[in-house]
Length: 160
Image (cartoon, rainbow, N blue to C red; front, side, top):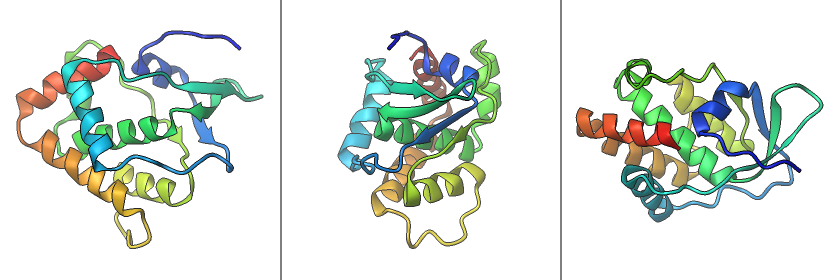
């Protein structure tokens, strides 16, 4: 095993695909956890680590630990982007490279919801987990309120 410290953007730029093993536990955050996660980013706090294992394919990973944090982080990025905050402009203004299109694959209904919010294709979300919908709506509300605050939030995200 090899430990390596990189920002989440450095990692996302280098990864081609991140998947989850089928026997991984389900998403376990509720609205309170998501609020704490958002506040941690806003305050510039440490968000924890992700444990990944490599696959036989170059730059493809399987998430071992940090599944819920990666999903919540991804929903936050989608909320920033879907609020027409011009995510690409944020990233370029902050002198960062925007992660290339990344294939994140979460588990079952979690993945269905993530695909819907990341592509803005909301067909039928009735079967999606209610907690994901609540968390995503929280992030939409928080990132829509103030462009300057959202820009500062993006700066904190990029530092991580």
